[in-house]
Structures are given as C-alpha cells and as structure tokens.
Image (cartoon, rainbow, N blue to C red):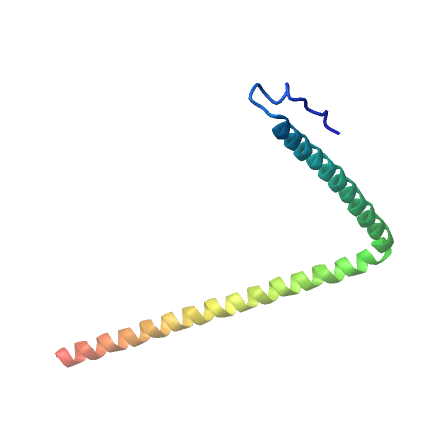
Length: 110
C-alpha cells in the first residue's frame, strides 16, 4: 500500500478533508492495481493451462485454419483477378466502341 499522507504532506493550504480524500483515492488506486495484477496473472495461468491442454489438437486446428486462410486469400485473389479482367474487358470494349464511332464519324465526314 502507499504510505499514508499527513496534513503536512498535502501542502500548506491542504485541509484534513482534502488529505483524507487524497489518501482514499491513492489507496483505492493501489487496491485496484493489486486486483488487476492478480486478475492478469490468473488469466495468464488459465491461458497457459488451456494452451497445454490444447497442444495435441493445435496442430490439426492450426493446419486447418492456415488452409482456410490460404483458400480465402486464393479466392480473394481469383475474384480480384476476375474483376480486373472484367474491368480490362470493359475498357477494351469501350475502346473498340469509341474506335468504331470515330470510324463512323470519319466516314460520315467524307
């Protein structure tokens, strides 16, 4: 715990009420800190136990998960390539249409 504060430590203008409130806040903060540290240690211990228990199965799960991520990435890549190909095809068709329109305009001009 933090050391208790006296009225002299609170400053020349500090009242006993202000010093008591300051002491209460500091002590409450230290209690919260201790509880949080204990909770973090507890969570870490539980996580390590879960990890140890799951080690025999983690290889299969992780392999399946990596395959799933790989397949998802591959599907995204295929979709993106198809989309890019579609965009290229649309641009090419627009170019062909524009060229045909220019030929038509030139023919009409003559």
